[in-house]
Length: 172
Image (cartoon, rainbow, N blue to C red; front, side, top):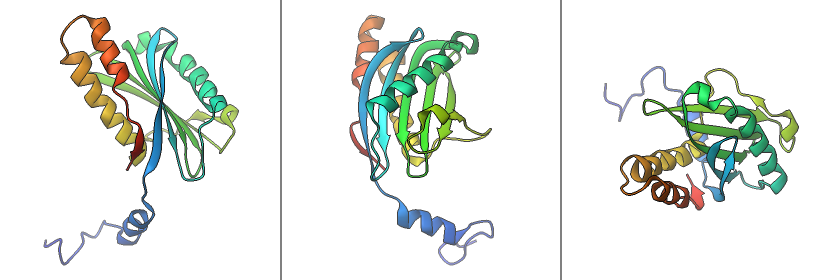
């Protein structure tokens, strides 16, 4: 099949082009690293146009992360996590990404209506990060590998380097 001339039957050209037309950068900023429920948690704000992650949003997300991470050791958690507080265009999202045994990760996604952190609930089965969240998680995968797994020196120095390696500005 010549993809230059013909699209495979399963490709939804209209939907893909509509997504492409609406795609944009989203601001992101690190919210610091802190101890939460026995984990070192690196947090981020991610904001759709016209939206802002507030201190109240961050505190609510940290409480949600603490509840999730409280049983992290039972899921093989190694004690490092990434928290994304996403003020999205269609709702609010909180992602808790934890490194677990066997070079694996555990991901919890919570969703809810705009500006109602008390209504955030676990996302549906199969829900995965959006393109902007995935960009942050890709950076964090690389930072974890670079500083913690492949780093040298004492572990506290590796964790400090991992904590300092953040994304600020925008993601696409």
